[in-house]
Length: 381
Ligand SMILES: *Cc1c(COP(=O)(O)O)cnc(C)c1O
Image (cartoon, rainbow, N blue to C red):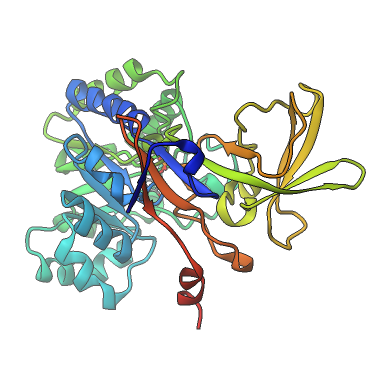
């Protein structure tokens, strides 16, 4: 690990986590836990910068993992509660998952019946649950709607099988994506109207992720009230939330550099990063990443299309305008690049992965990971 004190020495491209901002988000989680008496887990799917786990371990209760590899990471690097859910478990992985997980959540009654006793055999203390589909969601797009038509995620009321109840300690739902508490309210109503009869016999209910808790205008007080009301209705039931995005929300940026400027009907800056490989949600979701100091295309005099350094024509971050002309070597800083970036990044086109750095509270910057050719080679054969 290398430590630098001058931001100019930051390698490029590089993700830079701001410890102070992450701690701010964790403080909001703490407030919710303290006031509503619920337990919050980190969803590794959205944020898995494990060298920062020490900043949240004393507050959060553990991690939610989407399968064996995330469960092992949680076990090795977070070492608190591990809640593992997978759309479908494989028999050969049950042993390793069950041994380190505290909760295991099945997607269907069929998986529950197939693996419940096996999992219990490896870990008699494991708590088993079922993911249900409340069949209500206000998710912004169909690919982020686990309750949409023909969804494979979670068990609908019609497919519920009461035969699992004897071994089932909890119910899990996940139906939100970047949503506010009003959306949760709607989901919860449907969850209770479909599955409410089973709640009193459960030890826990997991409210999933997608709560956009750390966003400035998120109504944290309303969430606390909603959680308290739920707990008042079911006093014996433990409540879990498992946000991913909200933990990493606005906690750091992706630093890149202008390599060349092409003129072809407009000015196009080629960067040493890639929308496709390093910030795929800008293409997939899609969304427009904010660039520090830049405006919308008509906001400032110098307009550029920002593009990645791969051979994919569509590897474009978008059009931005600047007060000064860009020149080769300039830094381009994409805001809010901590969640759903590192966990999704690829070495497509042999492009180097961005390094990972953490700016500590005292201002020093630790370069905690540098990538090289070997990372490209090692995942191929
Ligand atoms: C994706 C996911 C989460 C985390 O969602 P965020 O939108 O990152 O908060 C939590 N639980 C489950 C089951 C998920 O699939």
